[in-house]
Length: 380
Image (cartoon, rainbow, N blue to C red):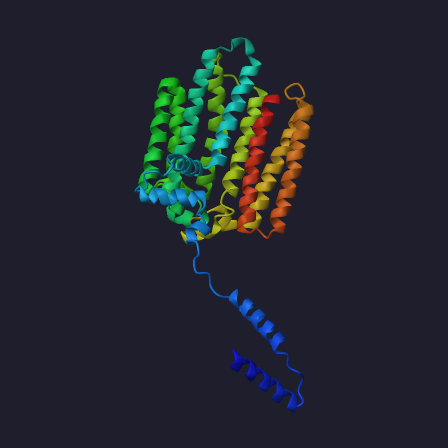
């Protein structure tokens, strides 16, 4: 200790001799101790909690880990069911499903509200069975179309279940065949020979539209006639006939039913024409000739909009010149609004330069107009 003090005094004397600042050993020791104290905080901790305690896993991650430890047996079945339901719903092509549902209910409600004294609870059971067979028929047609159009759908509609790999072709066949069997069985036991024959004819047209070697979708005129005939005439005539039949009434055309059948038949033509607006890339690649590939997207969009616009004008004129058959206060303003909205959507499509997304959005808008027509029909 004495040697250390002597050494410090010697250093201080040397510093003073060189003319440097005075040196205070005591302050030096204090600063040195302070520096050592600061450095001591940089020394790693001797113990650290394990990572899994500092960052505990999220609940879903913990559940997945537990499921793996148990061989996956704890995987929730509800999620599997929900995933399958979403795939099935996409497979059914919801916009066509809604179209069949709304059309059937609208026509039946119109007939029953005109004859309320003939209504019975048993009629609702038969009506429900009839609705099931129509929806199964619709599901069969869209299903078989997806089975035979997988390669085209990979380009045009990659979100569809088979094209996206969500279900296999074998699974799609099982679903499609099930819809066909349920639909035919229900039609056989619930409908008479005439309606069952009409139902089978519609299914035949849907099959010929898609299945080789016929594949009528390759021929533009045959393709849109098939769609217009099924979606326009057969559905409206068949549902109206069945709705009167269950009430014990003979078939009889009325101005409103003639109007909706004619209107929707032309609407079906427009849907058949415009359904390929967003599919032109895949159709050209696989040499599917459509009006879109022949005329071009812009011409076809204006042509389809023109037909539908004339349809709305004819509806307004029918209300003006046949006030005894239609409610002018409902038919005229609703169809005027729909016609104006159609014009705006056509302009928006043109301004969007007919991109695939814009063309698809325009086509789905036409389906919304289709639903709106049936929602208005019971009140006109």
